[in-house]
Length: 390
Image (cartoon, rainbow, N blue to C red; front, top):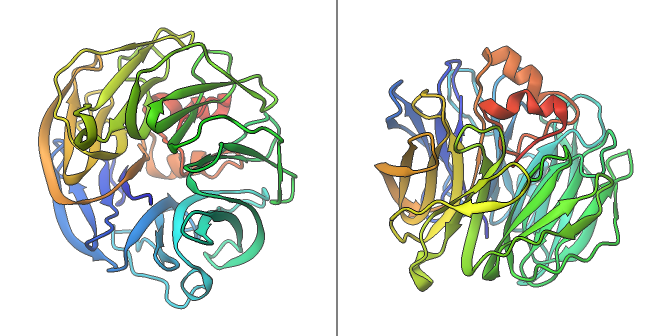
């Protein structure tokens, strides 16, 4: 299962709002009061058990829409331009799909609109990736399916450095796999069988400064792992050794302002007392843990963004219990400043629109831009440099 919380600019204002996806309660939208305090908007989006979500301009009207993966099916919510999200009834997602464990959006066929990549359960322990093409007006049609693994997370990016977005598949009960786009929105297995059994989350970004997208995989009951990309989409294990933990979520971002991607990991603190962790990058892919005493929550998701507009990335941890907002002092040291509605949400993705709203949407609409990947101020330019992070 995957559950989401999101920082994004929902209305046409230069501040981040939050959408929380919950498995037990209606999904919630929080608005930023302009000072970095989150206020419940009162919107309740659906009552289905919601497992995943993706965000992007689905209908071409220059605002951020939502796809929620549920049990069963998906729900599409189109932004009315004022931060309201009426649902789209009777879509193919509602009618024909089983439990949707993971969702991403990307222009897989390079026709200028965002398509949907879904991880759909086929049994208790297996799922398939399914591709649905968008006609540009948020009408989706089935296109292709592949794989048969217990997929817990999907990250989409130009992994092999051609023009088309590829897929990194993080699997719980089998090794992770990489799928290359054939150029028409269908995908072929790269042949790599990455030994990361028990994967719960994956984040893509340039971790060692060579401009290629690497992968950080969060593992439950095993040491987390970094896979380094050779530029052609072939991955090899980094020599970095992490401790054995129960990690459930990961996000990448520059937590100390040095221009390199750092790592924020959410732990299942209910198992062994592990806390939320920040690992700082030396720029070459070597990471050092920031020593701090944070609560041992059962953290199921991470979102990063500059919630208070001070120029540094803050953290929202979604927990089995109250979600927690942390302020970053600019060095990667965090202070807990606000608790939100107590629910159950598992994972996070964030969009920080630092440009004017139309310009940020224009950046997101590039063929290689993947809305399900983390987008924040230090990385909006990096999108054009092929250095994206989830």
